Image (cartoon, rainbow, N blue to C red; front, top):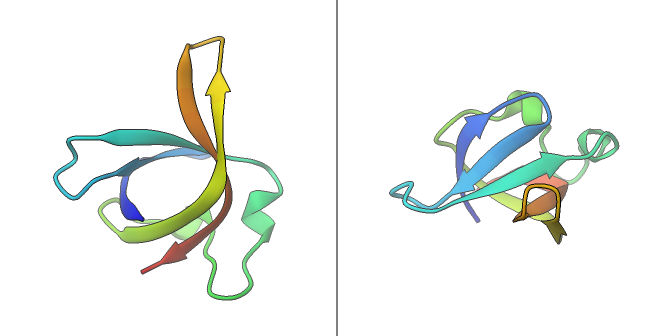
Length: 76
């Protein structure tokens, strides 16, 4: 759970309330199709909105960083 930071077509950032910490969230092609049970798509996401993101935490060796591969996205 956190707040939506910068939002792009396939990536957005999950931030804490003060935006001191950010995590990159990658949206897989099929994740946007999961709109049941109150889920929303990245296209509906607004910067600063309080959200809950389900996903898989992975390491990306090319850029030497961790990111979350999104499974579902809901508003709080």
